Structure formats: C-alpha cells, structure tokens
Image 1 (cartoon, rainbow, N blue to C red):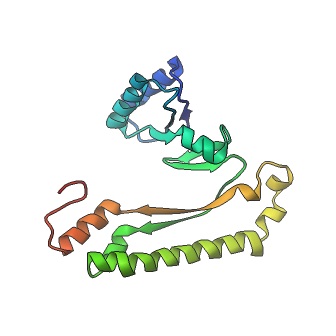
Image 2 (image 1 turned 180 degrees about the vertical axis):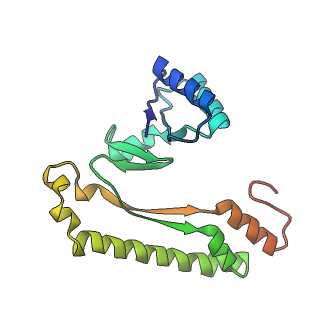
Length: 184
C-alpha cells in the first residue's frame, strides 16, 4: 500500500491531486501525520482528499514511532500498523450488528452479549496462535525466519470490529429511541 510521508513534497501533493481526481477506492493510501513536520495546509489537502475519495487514511506517525521505533513499522491496511519483519499472526472480526441482534436491550448488549462474543473471539485468537506457534511449528520451519526476513517475536494477533453504526441504530430502535448513529 502506498504511504505518504509527513513532509510537504511535490510528490506528495501530486499523488493527492491524482487520487482526488481519479476518485478510486483502491489502492489504499495512508498519510503519516506528524504535528512537528506536517504543515496545516497539507493536512487540509489530505482532509479534502478524504471528502473526494475516502482516503488517504491518516496514521499518527509520532505515536507509531513510539510503539514500533521510528521507521520500523508499516501501515498494512486502513488503520493497521505492524512492525517490520513481523505482521498479524491472525485476524478475527466481531460483527457488532450481529451481536446487537442477539441482545434483548442496550444493557444486555453491554453486560452479557458483547462480553460473551468478545470472550469467544479471544478463544479463537488463542486457538489460532497455539496452532501457529506450538502445533504447526510454522516459524520453526519457515525459510523466512531462517533467512532473517521475519521474526516470530514481531507478530501480533489482531482483533477487529465492524457494523458499529448498524448496531447503534438497531439498539436505539429496539429501545424506542428516536436516534441514529451520529445523530441525536
């Protein structure tokens, strides 16, 4: 995925102009923002692009630099940052709308249903990681590890959620509230 650095360069501006003009959702594009480096007018240009074509995604460079050390990470999809030489050992996603459909109320959603499905997701993550690291011996047998291209210690399981707006709308509707996601 193309990544735009925080500095204001002619190449960065040209990519933003072309992306806004083409209005394509692919490929993903990420802008690494740094308050110390990125000028306000460039950030405004990035925001205008988001209005035109829903990208680039904005990554907080100074935060990621602290987590991974500067320059030792990659943006692998819209908001996922992973260490270089590593990656996601697994990715599970929780459909919040489906969780809301299985809830009897807003309180039930937060006190029973959501925690139940989060525990299930954690069990899935643990099972997949156990298989990857302990049963299949993937990393022990991988030429990528042997050649020093990847490091098993730089992999992390990932947990994603989707369907937030639909879940909020459904929970509000079922509670008799005249509210929608993003609106009172």
